[in-house]
Length: 154
Image (cartoon, rainbow, N blue to C red; front, top):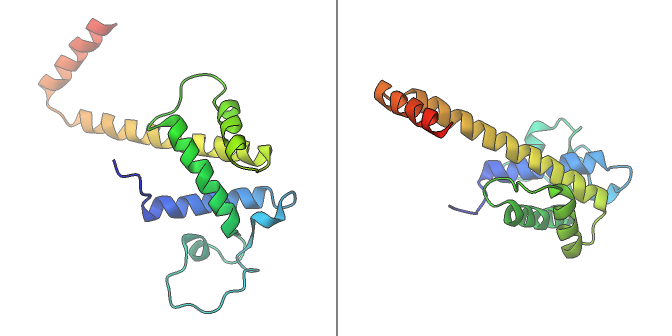
């Protein structure tokens, strides 16, 4: 599968970084600023998703914070692969792993990991629901054999 993020994934990632920058605004003001405070020259390029959504009240993450968060994201994906690690203390173990690679505050790392874990679980649940709804569209013989299989397993 392709590891390059789609535009939607990239926009969602930037949004998450901005959300975390807003959450930790008082503790770590260097993580980002409100879009209304971000003075940019007029550009004929398409605005980012955060700029598009914002009427000045969303937080746009700083470039340095996005670079660090991309390292977090890479380590998150290596740690969990396509699913979620099923061992205990995943936040604690992943925080330790990221802390070794990046010099960032532990509370920020934990918040990132928690949000990414919630997002991953939501995605996995949505995929599961989609698979099940596709399964309902199969023929009745397929459903009967599935029921027999379930009885055999249980």
